[in-house]
Image (cartoon, rainbow, N blue to C red; front, top):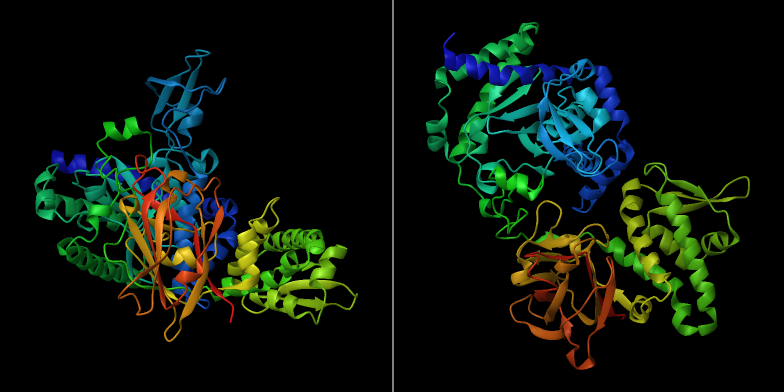
Length: 606
């Protein structure tokens, strides 16, 4: 065999062996046992509900679940630069490598890295396992281990999946997404999906060969990951292009040798469709490549050494022209309206404050327990006297409104006990319960904001509008996330430190006088918080703007901290659009990004 052809074959063939292990039913079952399927199902359905899809199609659910599986895996797997000392837990220093022992070799370990502890002088071994079944136990490594194990997870949940090998020392996964009728790129190390130009444009990697492998075939998918194909061709010098095709076809024929003719022909037809799709994509104009990030996994020294730092100042995908997004947030307003009614005594009768706070705490505890139940079958008995007093009154209009806003209903069972359970589509409760819990958490703190309570009782939160922003992060940090009432989602503007805006248009033919507004800080990185801003209103759908309020030097001392600001009476006028212009973040020297968890616009009650 020609030497270049043999070298190419030797680079590809070993990875094919581990791909066959993804089909092991026992390995797939072991992978599924480590995942809380119910929790990921719920997150997937919530993500679709936030787009107004409360009854999504099977293909939409499968796509949403795959993305949640990717996010879960990124959090559950551990990146290892240098392992901690196996003796004392201190940081270690690399000293070279050695051959695997018999036990390590059982799990397809081809090399072992050695590290020495400068504190206790003990050596720590770091076997580089290639058996995905072993990786279910160790749950640690670098990109090879990450992609290997994640591909097994994808197969375990029924996705057509491939391990993708770059000859430039990186590995990731592809899955066939029926919703799009194509193969989609997933990088578990980065938690990024469907951004195939990440490596060429974001990491600034030199592309040559990128090969996708699965139990039923091996494919050259390089053109999917480049928009510089003629340049890439000049770097593919291991062997001739004809030899590349022949080697991959040889391996593919081996994989399909035992298939019946009909299945073999079907796969060959799909191969042809994919080749045409890849060829078209390689000729397409690259979109938003300037926003692709440099590598995020691994320490900075290691990434710098590999030349993968890329676009450090823009660590997330953004759209240059953000679309207008519908906000499906009526449930947030209904929840706040019903809880506001429960809280009315806080302002109207000083001697009832203690009683109301005790009741709200009991309500929070009950809803927290209910939220912990499997989301499709949530049901819980009212236990304490306070719970029964607050939630067990059949004719209490306020309680009925609260339960309806949460997608819940009460039942008095034959044994005389009250139960609260799902009423209708369980996704309604899944979306609503986190909103109610966050609100009750704010109200039951030692010193709840007086303005928050005031406008919860006397105002009405505006809803069902449309949002558009100067920039946003895809897929989660979009403009509508600022209005979904969820603390763990957020609007993110990747270049917001330079100035950013977000507009909320009220539904057509609707205008309101703004009385107050509330901004809630996001889950991390205080330096990304808004610091200076101007709020403006418009009565002509955003053609002209008038200032309603401005703030300078605002500090959000805690994560998920809500601050309420009132509009002075002289600035009251009917508006159909609102624009928040953020002119500074807390620390632009550390971050280019702006992030806000929630924005609530509050009007005077009619």
